[in-house]
Length: 318
Image (cartoon, rainbow, N blue to C red; front, top):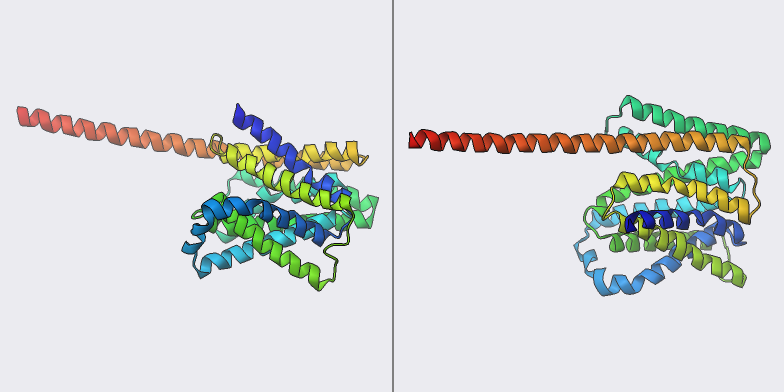
């Protein structure tokens, strides 16, 4: 029960991200930089105390993967935060959280993972939903459509971040991996901010509070609860819980930002949630079937060995 409560709180925590970004007056790159920078600062005592020795086992290839992963994460945040300047929270959040769709397309293209008919149907439903949202925003304004495109590119970036990071996550603890990747992303963002000559400090006190809230609530508190719950629930359940980020963000935008939800956004969101939900459920069922089949083979093998040993002993006694 505690794990399920953690998933609910985590989903709500992540859904505040778009709202805090909307409230800030700082440029998107600066907001993204301070979100990750403050997260790294808060993680430093724990990393230094318990996890710093893990980095000694990393080779050049590991650091290359970490650098690529951090760079993709940095540009994901830049593009997503920028999309919120042009389109609504509802459209941006729904489109940017299409990463399960991008993930299995990436797995199919780069890792030759087989896709079933049900997975293709799920993908088409999700794509149809994104098209409906984009078409509705195009009729609202060209800027809204531009924001949708930025959100989709940001989604592709975060998918690449997950795919590249798989290599490191297999050998590093969660704290070490996130600390290194967040740190690299912070450096990339600081260079980006300096190149475009954005100010690092000339912001209102209110903006600084939102920077810290972005680092604590959606980055550390939200994602940490998901990873904590992974000890008791499977990854499919966590992925399903992340789907509620869209609903939470839309509700919060309606309450705090007075954003109206258009019919095209509601219909498109429905198709995307159904598509990704069906995909995750199908993956979960496939995983359960593999486990059951493995257990059956194991039990048969054990029974066969026992039967052979009993037969040998019987013949020996006879």
